[in-house]
Image (cartoon, rainbow, N blue to C red; front, side, top):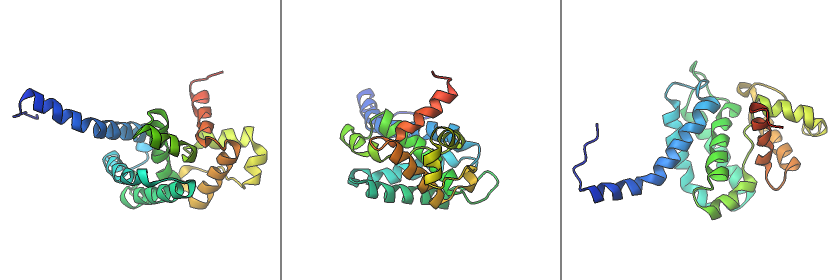
Length: 194
């Protein structure tokens, strides 16, 4: 148990300093666990939170879509290099992208963090969290695009960088101003929205 030896006002000041990091860590944890936590190694969430925090140190420097995509690719590779699957195997590109993209959706788009101007600048570049629901929806609702981009319906364990990038190009063509809008279908299906 943590015991405070500071005055109450000093303790409150200390908590104020930690609040934004706490929000970051908690949203990262809450994004990771339901999106991919059961597939990846035990306690992988702690690694993810720290990798994400380190990756976000560069976020203010990102101005363009290409810069975002390069940053995102480095983020994915850090996940792949530092976290294993629950069975001890290497994490695929498809598995690594899922917690990253869910976290970016929650933190940057929905919570409008780390700052409103950064969020506004980054939102058009965010990737759609790729999963079975999104693949199914795209194939059913946008078959010409599915075919145009030579998309492949596969498990996340089978999705590698080239295939993943084709999916994102498809989403960006379908919704150029905000590709992440495509992810609303996930909620539509999950919560039976009409």
